[in-house]
Image 1 (cartoon, rainbow, N blue to C red):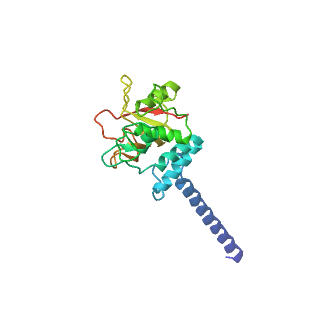
Image 2 (cartoon, rainbow, N blue to C red):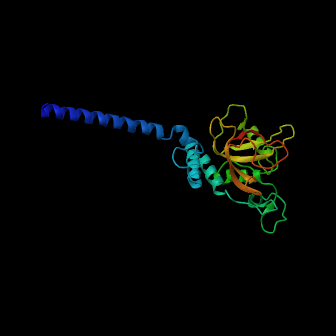
Image 3 (tube, one colour):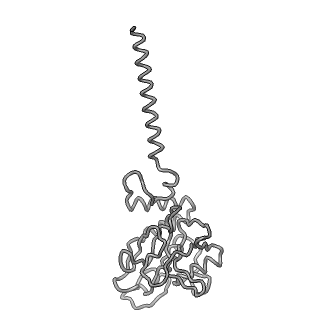
Length: 240
Protein backbone atom coordinates (compact mmCIF):
# COMPACT_ATOMS: atom_id res chain seq x y z
CA UNK A 1 0.00 0.00 0.00
CA UNK A 2 1.40 3.34 -0.97
CA UNK A 3 2.19 6.07 1.52
CA UNK A 4 -0.39 8.31 -0.18
CA UNK A 5 -3.21 5.79 0.34
CA UNK A 6 -2.20 5.21 4.00
CA UNK A 7 -2.20 8.95 4.64
CA UNK A 8 -5.65 9.30 3.06
CA UNK A 9 -7.07 6.56 5.27
CA UNK A 10 -5.58 8.18 8.39
CA UNK A 11 -7.22 11.48 7.46
CA UNK A 12 -10.53 9.69 6.93
CA UNK A 13 -10.31 7.94 10.36
CA UNK A 14 -9.35 11.18 12.09
CA UNK A 15 -12.24 13.04 10.44
CA UNK A 16 -14.69 10.32 11.51
CA UNK A 17 -13.39 10.38 15.09
CA UNK A 18 -13.72 14.17 15.17
CA UNK A 19 -17.33 14.01 13.94
CA UNK A 20 -18.22 11.35 16.52
CA UNK A 21 -16.66 13.43 19.33
CA UNK A 22 -18.44 16.55 18.12
CA UNK A 23 -21.74 14.70 18.13
CA UNK A 24 -21.16 13.54 21.73
CA UNK A 25 -20.40 17.10 22.84
CA UNK A 26 -23.52 18.50 21.14
CA UNK A 27 -25.73 15.77 22.63
CA UNK A 28 -24.31 16.36 26.11
CA UNK A 29 -24.92 20.09 25.81
CA UNK A 30 -28.61 19.65 25.02
CA UNK A 31 -29.11 16.92 27.62
CA UNK A 32 -27.37 18.70 30.50
CA UNK A 33 -28.17 22.35 29.97
CA UNK A 34 -31.09 23.71 32.07
CA UNK A 35 -34.28 24.01 30.07
CA UNK A 36 -36.42 27.15 30.03
CA UNK A 37 -38.62 25.45 32.63
CA UNK A 38 -35.66 24.91 34.95
CA UNK A 39 -34.50 28.52 34.74
CA UNK A 40 -37.97 29.88 35.42
CA UNK A 41 -38.78 27.41 38.22
CA UNK A 42 -35.78 27.43 40.55
CA UNK A 43 -36.80 24.77 43.06
CA UNK A 44 -37.05 21.81 40.69
CA UNK A 45 -34.41 19.10 40.36
CA UNK A 46 -31.02 20.28 39.10
CA UNK A 47 -28.57 18.04 37.27
CA UNK A 48 -25.63 19.74 38.96
CA UNK A 49 -25.08 19.88 42.70
CA UNK A 50 -27.93 21.31 44.74
CA UNK A 51 -27.85 25.12 44.83
CA UNK A 52 -27.30 26.89 48.14
CA UNK A 53 -30.03 28.80 49.96
CA UNK A 54 -28.45 32.07 48.82
CA UNK A 55 -28.32 30.86 45.21
CA UNK A 56 -31.98 29.81 45.32
CA UNK A 57 -32.92 33.23 46.69
CA UNK A 58 -30.99 34.94 43.90
CA UNK A 59 -32.73 32.81 41.27
CA UNK A 60 -36.14 33.51 42.85
CA UNK A 61 -35.49 37.25 42.74
CA UNK A 62 -34.20 37.22 39.15
CA UNK A 63 -37.18 35.18 37.94
CA UNK A 64 -39.62 37.52 39.69
CA UNK A 65 -37.89 40.64 38.32
CA UNK A 66 -38.13 39.19 34.81
CA UNK A 67 -41.93 39.36 35.17
CA UNK A 68 -41.92 42.88 36.60
CA UNK A 69 -39.65 45.09 38.73
CA UNK A 70 -42.38 45.24 41.41
CA UNK A 71 -42.52 41.47 41.72
CA UNK A 72 -38.73 41.32 41.89
CA UNK A 73 -38.71 43.78 44.79
CA UNK A 74 -41.48 41.89 46.59
CA UNK A 75 -39.56 38.60 46.46
CA UNK A 76 -36.27 40.26 47.43
CA UNK A 77 -37.81 41.91 50.49
CA UNK A 78 -39.63 38.74 51.56
CA UNK A 79 -36.45 36.67 51.16
CA UNK A 80 -34.52 39.20 53.28
CA UNK A 81 -36.77 38.48 56.28
CA UNK A 82 -36.39 34.69 56.35
CA UNK A 83 -35.30 33.61 59.82
CA UNK A 84 -37.01 36.42 61.73
CA UNK A 85 -38.87 35.08 64.77
CA UNK A 86 -40.86 36.42 67.69
CA UNK A 87 -40.25 35.70 71.35
CA UNK A 88 -40.77 32.00 72.15
CA UNK A 89 -44.23 32.40 73.69
CA UNK A 90 -45.76 35.60 72.23
CA UNK A 91 -46.79 37.07 68.89
CA UNK A 92 -44.99 40.34 69.65
CA UNK A 93 -43.56 41.32 66.26
CA UNK A 94 -42.23 44.30 64.34
CA UNK A 95 -44.55 43.96 61.32
CA UNK A 96 -47.71 44.54 63.34
CA UNK A 97 -45.94 47.37 65.14
CA UNK A 98 -45.21 48.95 61.75
CA UNK A 99 -48.96 49.12 61.10
CA UNK A 100 -49.70 50.12 64.72
CA UNK A 101 -51.94 47.07 64.99
CA UNK A 102 -52.10 44.71 67.94
CA UNK A 103 -51.82 44.72 71.71
CA UNK A 104 -49.13 46.79 73.43
CA UNK A 105 -48.19 44.23 76.06
CA UNK A 106 -44.72 43.47 74.74
CA UNK A 107 -41.49 44.26 76.57
CA UNK A 108 -40.38 46.50 73.70
CA UNK A 109 -41.85 48.55 70.85
CA UNK A 110 -43.37 45.52 69.12
CA UNK A 111 -47.10 44.81 69.12
CA UNK A 112 -48.76 41.50 69.87
CA UNK A 113 -51.03 39.76 67.35
CA UNK A 114 -50.90 36.91 64.84
CA UNK A 115 -49.10 38.53 61.97
CA UNK A 116 -49.08 36.61 58.66
CA UNK A 117 -51.28 39.27 57.02
CA UNK A 118 -49.32 42.13 58.59
CA UNK A 119 -46.12 40.61 57.19
CA UNK A 120 -47.54 40.20 53.66
CA UNK A 121 -48.95 43.75 53.66
CA UNK A 122 -45.60 45.08 54.93
CA UNK A 123 -43.68 43.32 52.13
CA UNK A 124 -46.04 44.65 49.46
CA UNK A 125 -45.91 48.18 50.85
CA UNK A 126 -42.12 48.23 51.19
CA UNK A 127 -41.80 47.00 47.59
CA UNK A 128 -43.97 49.83 46.30
CA UNK A 129 -47.27 48.01 45.77
CA UNK A 130 -50.55 49.84 46.19
CA UNK A 131 -51.42 49.19 49.86
CA UNK A 132 -54.06 50.91 51.98
CA UNK A 133 -53.99 49.47 55.50
CA UNK A 134 -57.10 50.18 57.50
CA UNK A 135 -60.04 48.32 59.00
CA UNK A 136 -62.49 48.96 56.18
CA UNK A 137 -63.81 46.20 53.93
CA UNK A 138 -61.73 46.08 50.77
CA UNK A 139 -58.53 47.37 52.38
CA UNK A 140 -55.69 45.36 53.90
CA UNK A 141 -55.31 44.81 57.62
CA UNK A 142 -54.30 42.14 60.14
CA UNK A 143 -57.15 39.85 59.06
CA UNK A 144 -55.98 37.25 56.55
CA UNK A 145 -59.38 37.52 54.87
CA UNK A 146 -58.61 41.15 54.01
CA UNK A 147 -56.40 39.91 51.17
CA UNK A 148 -59.33 38.07 49.62
CA UNK A 149 -61.55 41.15 50.01
CA UNK A 150 -58.83 43.40 48.59
CA UNK A 151 -58.32 41.15 45.57
CA UNK A 152 -62.02 40.57 44.95
CA UNK A 153 -62.74 44.32 44.98
CA UNK A 154 -59.95 45.01 42.48
CA UNK A 155 -60.34 42.06 40.12
CA UNK A 156 -57.05 40.47 41.20
CA UNK A 157 -58.45 37.49 43.09
CA UNK A 158 -57.73 34.11 41.44
CA UNK A 159 -59.42 31.13 43.04
CA UNK A 160 -58.00 27.62 42.89
CA UNK A 161 -59.50 25.92 39.84
CA UNK A 162 -59.71 29.14 37.83
CA UNK A 163 -56.75 28.12 35.67
CA UNK A 164 -54.60 30.96 37.00
CA UNK A 165 -50.88 30.17 37.31
CA UNK A 166 -49.48 31.92 40.40
CA UNK A 167 -46.60 34.34 39.96
CA UNK A 168 -43.83 35.40 42.33
CA UNK A 169 -45.07 38.29 44.44
CA UNK A 170 -48.66 37.02 44.63
CA UNK A 171 -50.12 36.32 48.05
CA UNK A 172 -51.41 32.77 48.55
CA UNK A 173 -54.62 32.50 50.57
CA UNK A 174 -55.45 29.43 52.68
CA UNK A 175 -58.61 28.15 54.33
CA UNK A 176 -60.94 30.81 52.93
CA UNK A 177 -64.60 30.77 54.00
CA UNK A 178 -66.32 33.42 51.90
CA UNK A 179 -69.55 33.14 53.90
CA UNK A 180 -67.90 34.20 57.16
CA UNK A 181 -64.91 36.04 55.63
CA UNK A 182 -62.44 33.94 57.59
CA UNK A 183 -59.07 32.66 56.37
CA UNK A 184 -56.48 30.49 58.04
CA UNK A 185 -53.31 32.03 56.63
CA UNK A 186 -51.62 33.99 53.85
CA UNK A 187 -48.10 33.60 52.46
CA UNK A 188 -45.91 35.29 49.83
CA UNK A 189 -45.41 33.27 46.61
CA UNK A 190 -41.77 33.11 45.48
CA UNK A 191 -42.00 30.42 42.77
CA UNK A 192 -44.31 27.83 41.29
CA UNK A 193 -43.72 24.65 39.29
CA UNK A 194 -46.57 23.66 36.93
CA UNK A 195 -48.12 20.40 38.00
CA UNK A 196 -47.51 20.92 41.70
CA UNK A 197 -50.42 21.37 44.07
CA UNK A 198 -49.15 24.60 45.61
CA UNK A 199 -46.44 27.26 45.40
CA UNK A 200 -43.14 27.73 47.14
CA UNK A 201 -43.89 30.57 49.53
CA UNK A 202 -42.45 32.64 52.36
CA UNK A 203 -44.65 32.51 55.43
CA UNK A 204 -44.82 35.21 58.05
CA UNK A 205 -45.87 33.78 61.42
CA UNK A 206 -45.17 30.24 60.22
CA UNK A 207 -44.62 27.43 62.69
CA UNK A 208 -43.11 24.52 60.77
CA UNK A 209 -39.52 25.25 61.89
CA UNK A 210 -40.33 26.98 65.18
CA UNK A 211 -42.84 29.22 66.89
CA UNK A 212 -43.95 32.27 64.89
CA UNK A 213 -41.13 32.62 62.34
CA UNK A 214 -40.57 33.81 58.76
CA UNK A 215 -39.85 30.61 56.86
CA UNK A 216 -39.96 29.09 53.39
CA UNK A 217 -42.49 26.38 52.66
CA UNK A 218 -42.28 24.28 49.49
CA UNK A 219 -45.23 22.99 47.46
CA UNK A 220 -47.60 24.83 49.79
CA UNK A 221 -50.90 23.09 49.19
CA UNK A 222 -51.75 23.60 52.85
CA UNK A 223 -50.86 26.50 55.09
CA UNK A 224 -47.53 26.37 56.90
CA UNK A 225 -49.23 26.75 60.27
CA UNK A 226 -50.70 24.50 62.92
CA UNK A 227 -54.47 24.86 62.95
CA UNK A 228 -57.58 22.83 63.62
CA UNK A 229 -59.48 24.63 60.86
CA UNK A 230 -59.18 23.95 57.12
CA UNK A 231 -55.84 25.23 55.81
CA UNK A 232 -56.15 24.13 52.16
CA UNK A 233 -54.97 26.51 49.45
CA UNK A 234 -57.91 28.66 48.30
CA UNK A 235 -56.37 31.00 45.73
CA UNK A 236 -54.08 33.94 45.01
CA UNK A 237 -54.16 37.71 45.10
CA UNK A 238 -51.94 39.72 42.73
CA UNK A 239 -50.24 43.01 43.69
CA UNK A 240 -50.68 46.27 41.84
